[in-house]
Length: 425
Figure 1: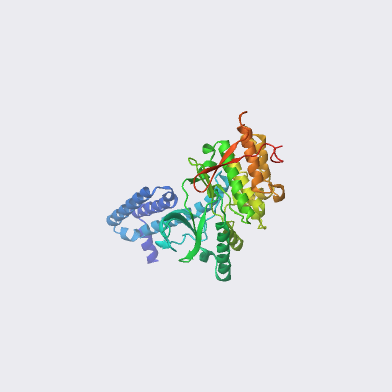
Figure 2: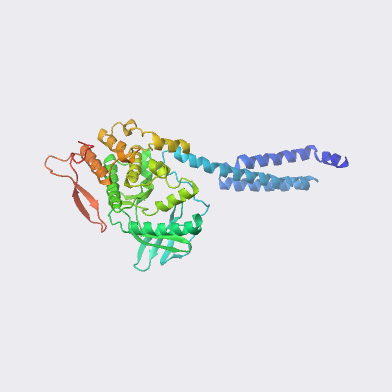
């Protein structure tokens, strides 16, 4: 009973005001700090410390009640932590709803494994990118004195035992196949190796930027330029498919361009199959589900027509600034990709020609058997639409399309006439 009276005596008006103030400060940390800038957070923390010291000095019992100040800090940091945890899934679902090209889920651990000053024979200069399974570094090859891009894969983080052995073998097999691709519009792979527990690919270092900025409605490229670059990607894919290599992750982030020099490069051949293995093992949709074909999402065996579906999604986005399927719910999005026909691009841009809408619709057919049989057919149709938009003058007998080659020169290829394909007769 005496203890109860003692506790009751602590709740004087001054002490009650102190408790109320500290509770208010705790609420401040819980609800407001996650929304403040780092400078404002530090300022608020200093003000709280000064106020708590002043209160503890002023009241005899303040030293006891100031114990609630650490509780305020504890609750505040708990609120901050829970807020960050809540933001992450919201951003992941929001990416599916927004007209952005990426819907990559985070890697299986918070941090991508770091590398030392060297990786294999390559001297690491700086990190220039990060993906779902590793990082990309700018490096120097001392053997031949050239800059290279190094892409790492943390296989040992995602696999173990026999699975790790199989994943490593799959990685080197895919890298070897990708290294055989010799096309002016496919990034060159120089080497594949393993060091510091990381598998890595050394590839051509590219200047310019990817296509991601040009997928926003306010920054769309001119339609003829879109048709030209997508046709070149389709031709590059046709070359890869003819050698039995399926990309599996065609998206704007994996196509590099240099507008000034007209360079177009498809990147990341040999990577996506390992990512698919992680997805199969964990049940997590890695990569870019917004660009995946229905058969890829369902885990079926893939051929080049799956890449052409992904290219059709990219073409749709480059023309309209929107994706053919968007939903804040991953389940709804996957159902739309599997079942729902994509809206006509002319419902967003009525000025586009009907022939171009036919090309997009054919590339986005749900069943692979109804799509283009290969990338050359799709490229022919895109170039034919380009001729419709920019007809040649009467004095010209053929249209010459410049194609970049590896040494920076240009060769000329006659484009197909309007009778080249069934779709545009």
